[in-house]
Image (cartoon, rainbow, N blue to C red; front, top):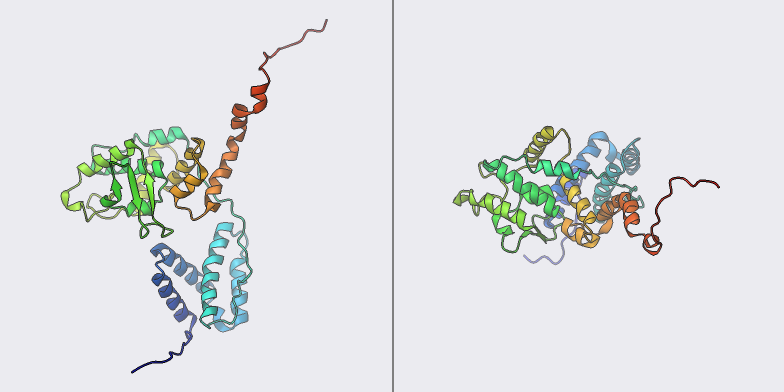
Length: 314
């Protein structure tokens, strides 16, 4: 039978629309985390407002109340806005809604929270993993990778042995593993490559094509919860506290302080544009006074005079 034209039918319910939307997103190769984020925000909204779909007016009222919560952080507001607005836009395109109630809403300015870790703490941190054990070797190598490349934890946990090039001192984050679905090559120092080589030398042969580069003692993928527990254990010994993602912040801050280029940092971090990277650049404003003392033209032009403690009046 030949079909000349297929009539498009709009989903009957918002739940049905959301499932079609998620399938459409999956077909567009969105990451599992992004799919989970969409689902989380959808479920949160309709759990708070189960009657939101009774009418367009009720939907609009519920959305405004959801976004208008008191003391809501800019990052939380922006996430709710982006995920729900994108879904509602798709609903308009599919004929589920006549209009998008969130059209015209703008993101709130979010300076972001960047955790700074003192360099001495990082030096002490690298002394803690027991390198006489596999877990200690893995932790040491992984810590160096985070501090050497700024890779996202989930991206690091998904790396395979084939993604590592020891001779070139490179790690490849392919599109499927990258949060932004854009592949990138990360350059690492010879010290980090040496630590990875030592880790690989103690792994069983059967792990080569089956186990992630940084895996558990059983060759299973390392999760953010397991790694978080490891970092928490090390932090207790150091008498401090920070989350694993703070190591990405530490890399970015130290890279810029080491006169690294902001555009190069953007590429290494895998940011799609400079918006996120500029947060680290702004943080460097605290270093401006020190830089000014070092590089001020006036300090170079005028000779430095000895300071007189007191001038006696004659």
